[in-house]
Length: 131
Image (cartoon, rainbow, N blue to C red; front, side, top):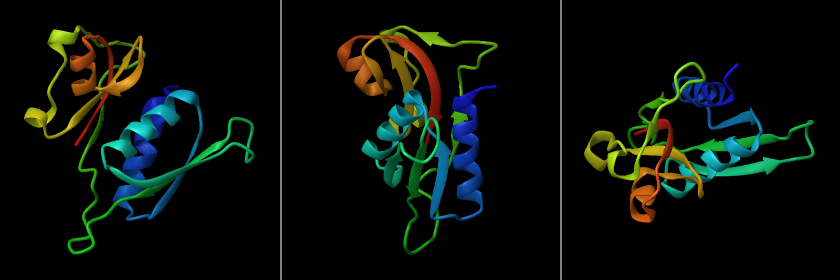
């Protein structure tokens, strides 16, 4: 079982079904990924509901273009999997769509985007691509 892949799949399914809000079981890494998605403008808002269940629930309001009704997230792609981890040094971090998308990286200084990791000169595990 891969909790990050489950998180990304729930987001993908909600986007394909044009849902406004999606509820996902919470964990610390999922909360950090949600914060990065919010900071980069891929989701409208989020709320951590810690009283709901044992681990809590993350409620994410998805972002859509008001005119075209297209989602702000075009693609979510899991890179590092439990069977094959993908690590990158700070100078070899991937650029997603030539800088238009983001790669979420788990570093020793926490979860951040590829651009932030390059600025802080840290490498880590490349979790996923978002664009």
